[in-house]
Structures are given as structure tokens and as C-alpha cells.
Amino acid sequence: MDGEDPSNSTTSLLSRSYNADTSSTPPPKHTTVPFISLLLATCLALSGAVAIAFLFLSSSPPHAQAQPNLKISESNAEYSRPLTKLKRPVVIMISSDGFRFGYQFKTDTPNIDNLINNGTEAELGLIPVFPTATFPNHYSIATGLYTPYHGIVYNNFFDPELNETFTRATGGSDPKWWFGEPLWETVVNHGFNAATYMWPGSEAPKGKWTCEEKFCKKFNSSVPFEERVDTILEYFDMPSRKIPVFMNLYFPDPDSQGHDVGPDDPELTEALGRIDSMIGRLIQGLKTRGVFEDVHIILVGDHGMAAICEKKYIYLDDLAIPQDWVEYNWAILGVRPPASYSPADVVANMTERLKNAENGKHLKVYLKEDLPTRLHYSASDRISPIIGLVDEGHIVTQSRSAGDDTCGGAHAYDNKYFSMRSIFIGHGPRFARGKKVPSFENVEIYNVVTSILNIKGAPTNGTDGFPNSVLLPQH
Image (cartoon, rainbow, N blue to C red; front, top):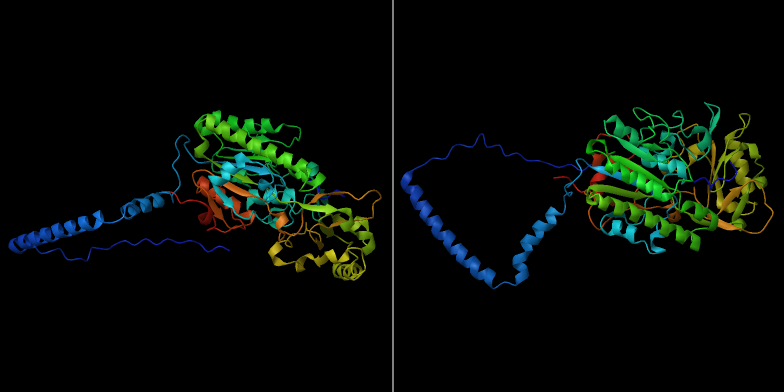
């Protein structure tokens, strides 16, 4: 989860309905003889038409007669499937940390394939928000907000107003760090139960969400994956009115393996197989309870992974940047110089030194307000005044380290890189079977979930019409 920092447009879809106004239509005039004559003529005409139609159809190839029924069947398939056992829609959202798009092709994943083949998939992956790190992206998925607006701008960061530094240990359960309205809060505010299992941000009380022990499992890396799945399944053994309508589940794999050995090592492939087996355990448990086809399963990741090696390092010592100015570094750089220094002057000096620094061409530094607007990474004092964008596969660190050249994996890079993409797979009554949709940013997921649950969500950076492109309409 924290391995990346070892140093410390959618148009709304409108439907028109046309109501025939017959109030001004004059009533028909009736006369007996003309009416009978007209009726007899009509019957003769219809009889002739039927005879001609019979002769035509009898000489037509078989598929021509069957085509109208096929169209009706296809039309029916365009609507969501009705619930058969559950009283209301339920969503289980699962995160597999660091599940890079394409990992599903590295090994046999029959259970994930089941969800893909019978559900809806972002065909070329899910686009994370910037920075492509664990805490910012999990909370963007939960709130539908870009990082400056939900407050979690990196895994560790400094807030100048609070004069405090956020870490999982210091701020994981303190609501002063977590802005926006996450899905679990939205759900309980509407009078339903929600359940979370180690999802970043869920331990912080917000609104009617109090992180009740029964429904809010706090972070504990030692809990076996099987126990996490079984806890979710046990919620379906509760009385119908108490079943949480929204549940989420967090797995730290394959992120940890990706950091240790990189995205192409057999150890990572083994981790993928384990995740797939947990998906299978969930599916089988839902089938045993007779609710699998009623439940909406959304499988996502928070970011991808890129391979790194020490020979691609950029050293801040070469740029004359003191260590105590550096708020975060690795695949992203955040620098907060003392108040006596002009950030613009520091950027100019760093840019000049990068020309002669080792691997310097692979780092570009900006005042945060000058970052590309597509990154949505400026509107918060929690963001360092100076941000460095690092080329994929390169790393920024303070000093040259002794020892052998080592390789592994990293993320937090610019979200334009394909290696940073993760997965989105949706299965359930509102998801079409075998459908592929274009890639989209994860801030759209919040509105997808609230649409499935038929509840009004909080304002987000997602687009109101987006769920229409992913979900089947309801009857």
C-alpha cells in the first residue's frame, strides 16, 4: 500500500416522451348504411391481404420469419434483470490493490473471467486519479472526487493549516483529514446499512457513519483473505432488511508483490491466482445462498505498476534540494521550501540543474498551479507548492545508495501512462453480459453505485449521465 514512498465529459442523456393530445379531436359521425358497406369492403380487403402474405411467407427462407422474434429478444436484453431473492439492490465493491490492467492475462483466472464474460468491463482498463497512489485513489473511488477535494493528496502529506502530517497511523480514523461524502456515509444517511472491510477512509466517523464494529473492519494486515470474504458472506445470513446494501472489501495483493519483485515476476503471478481464488470463494458463497445473480459485484484496482531499477534513479542531492524540504518522493516529487524561498525561483534553479544531473531529463518540475489541468492537482494547500513529474520507470530519491542494483515496481506516476491503469469489472442485474466500455476515470464509480442503489448521492467530480453508459436501464 505504501511501498511507493519509502522515504517518508459526458453529455446528459435525455429521453423525450410524447403525449398525444386528443381533446381537440372532433367525435366521429355515424351513419348506418355507409358504415356497413365500408365494413364489408374492409373485410374483403383484409382477406386478400392475408392470403397474399401467407403465400409470400411460405416461400421465404426460415430465418426471415424468425427475425422479428430475435429483435424482441434483443430488446428485452437491454433492460436490467429483476431480483429474484433479495428485496433491494446490493453492491459488493472489491479492491485488489495494484492490480494493473493486463494482469488478468498473466495466468489462469477463471473466476475473474466469469465476471468479465458475464458482465461489463472497461475494455482498456480503469484510469486512476493523480497521483496514482493507494490512499488517494481508494478515496476517490469512494467519494467520486479528485484528490484536492477529498483531501487525501498522497499516502503521506503535510497540512500547513493544521501544522500536522497525515499518515495512516496518525490520521486513518480522524475525520479532519477526510473530506467529501464516501459511499458508506451516503448509504447510512439514506437509512440503509453499509459495511466496509479495511477500505481507506472508512474508519473515520462521518455523518451517520460511526464505524460500528459489526460493519466496519479496521485495518489489520494479518487477517487472512478467506476470513475477509467469509465476513462479507455472513452479512447475507442476516434478516433481509438488515443486509448492508453496500459492502466493500480490500485486498493488499498484488501491490506488495509488485513493489518487491516488479510486475513480471512469478511471485506476482502467484498472487494473482490467490486473488482469483478469493473471487471464486465469494461467488460460491453467494451461489450457496441463492443470491449470486441478484448481487452487483464491482471489482476494481486503485492503480497499476511499473518496473523500476536503481540505474534509473534521479538524486535530489544533484539538485541542491535539502532533505527537509522534501514532503514526498519516489515516483512523484513534492517539495515545500521554507517561506523565505520563492517556489518559482526554486523551480527555475532545479530545472537548470536537471540539465546536467544523472537521468535529469526524466524529471520535470512545476509550480503546482502550472501542472497540466488534466491532473486536477493544484486546488489544495496540502499539495506541495512544487511538484515533480517523473518519467515512467524512473525514481526520485535523495542520495546515491550503496549496494547492488535492485529492481522492483513503483506507481504514483502520471495517470497518462498505460502501466498505471487498473481494472473495472461489473457483474449483476444492472450490468450487461459481455459488454465492453471505453476506459474512464475512477471518479465516475460513485455515481454508478448510487444509480444501482437508487439513492441520491452527494456532488462529485463525476458526470451525472455517466452511469447510463455503463448500466442497463431499469424497467
